[in-house]
Length: 308
Image 1 (cartoon, helix red, strand yellow):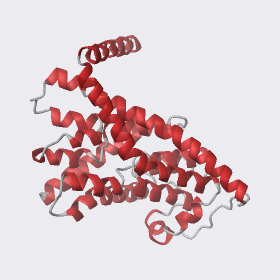
Image 2 (tube, one colour):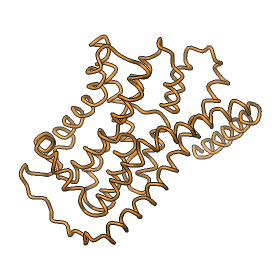
Image 3 (tube, one colour):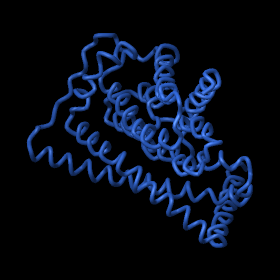
């Protein structure tokens, strides 16, 4: 019975959205074009180079060596292997959805266990610092940028440390334990070019799918615009919840806190992008969403306490 209801609701949603696209063709075209422009101007320059580089590093078996550079700082905090630390570093440096992508890829290649991947996915898939500093803080300048940076990155990091020492304390790794030796592929010019070619092809496929999510989720703004009207007090929340970048770009200064509160959650587009990265694994999207909601609530509490 439940499946039938879901089926009919999805059909109704499809018909409703199709009708809106047909009757509001100008607005739907503008929203789709906005999503396409954001993908081309924001996502591709910020994300594609990291996707390619990460693919090459993992393909050549050099990712653990890269993570070892950060191990003096991160291993005492997490007591995890270099393969896990690589996911943390890439997740925090590169942003959505690279954290999810490297977690899923490392899990699929048996570099980390499912339990480790679940822990990492819970806190290392966040808005990237280049995006946050270069776009969000320029759009909405704040008097205390350090507080904003702590809310975006300090809270997830502390949350991950707490999870590691409570719910995930069963993940076994003794401090100082030797890493499992992995056979390195031949580091010849031909192997480098082959891994580069494979990484570029895989990255282009992935980022094309992510662009589709951005365009589609931005197009969904037709629904709240039609149901609520352009003057509704709820409308500023709907845009970022559907597609975070376009949503916050339409906010005025009076609603800037909406942007800072919803950035940790990421919105439907980021959720869909995360699902795209983990769909071939048995990692749970629902667990991921639970942790994102908790971190969003912690961020809101932090902003309330410091009167940001």
